[in-house]
Image (cartoon, rainbow, N blue to C red; front, side):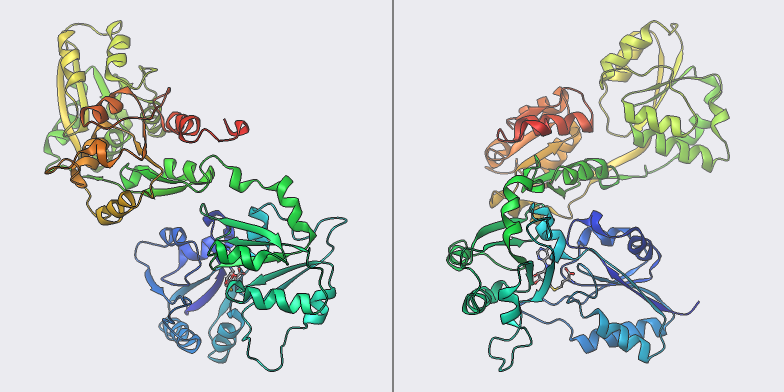
Length: 516
Ligand code: SAH
């Protein structure tokens, strides 16, 4: 197939606001060419082999000129590649998408344009401002605020805009705010007309400033309000008092650190985003293959000799079944064995493999599993536990005390991941982290070690004193306490939803009741 370009509107910032069609194009692309204002999180949907080319323009510097971007698209497409050209908002709303399409057409390069949600509508919407509203505004205009102030002949009809009773949405206008306001007032717009500035709309750190044409310039100056923002002018701005919703989410404007391994972070990160927060993924550990699979392979071959198979984690299930399949077996190899799963996620991942666990403790603790198994085991039963190399000894020892023969086999290893340490150190220093979540004792231990919080004169408790510490359960919390780290919330139910719930309850006392 010949090369082609998908010109895609990536939406205003909340990664969920790209279209299904746009996302499918990203998943299919060989090359992703992207701008500054797109949600960067979208890049992770690209194939792992994709090439990423940043062509963003920022107010300070131009990385590539528009012409160079056009040439780049043409050159890549002529090599037969599929290009996802991601633009913020909608590609044809001040996105210069039209120019790129014209250039492609001139070179006979196949293209498609995928519409996006424009910030002109979405930023006010996330601030509780509908651009039209029955009885208040029956139209809206989207206007560039970037016009050169020294331009002799303005292409904007300020006269018409001043008379317009509908909503005015200016993009790229923060730097020109006073000129926009002056022009409207000079042409007769009422100085009491409400106005709002919405910066980084739809993102967890969205900021909204409201006022009237008479005082907004002063307000924006004293708040040092910066771009990128949409300026909304009209009576609809007052609806914000009733309709604001996004900014009331429990984690709005909060940076919450996720210390889980990257492969397991998505559920927690997604929940944090859904609740209006910014997840900051800092996987201090990564899951890797063990040095050798030989002991696990041997155990799988002799599986019929065991009576019990105990899984203590999703990773244990995953690696065990990978090996099982690798050895050309399937789940029938488990026939006749009783299975245990610690935790609901482990149980679910086992179900995905066609195995219904016989014993699933309600509590996410090894001790609880032992209580349940007691009734069903016979002395001398053989137990296989495929799990992490460096797990706690409580479970196998307690089972042995019941007279069972236990083999603990390494199915995977957890190793340290130091990639983002500098970034997180800086955030801690600048008090930019509102909460840190720990989902196991090993995440605590690795966090402390990777950041060297206990090296020299450092004290983990002192470094983390201003940050809310949230733990998935009492064992994780006691590991924190061993390091002198004060814990602020402990989940009642030892799961990710339980952790999130306890964070909602404890992170911010001002959280609205409706979210609890
Ligand atoms: N094609 C884009 C607009 C590109 S022009 C769209 O449809 O949204 C760039 C301007 O868009 C910025 O200067 C700012 O005014 C606005 N903008 C883009 N994303 C924004 C966001 N998340 N919040 C507020 N304004 C945004």
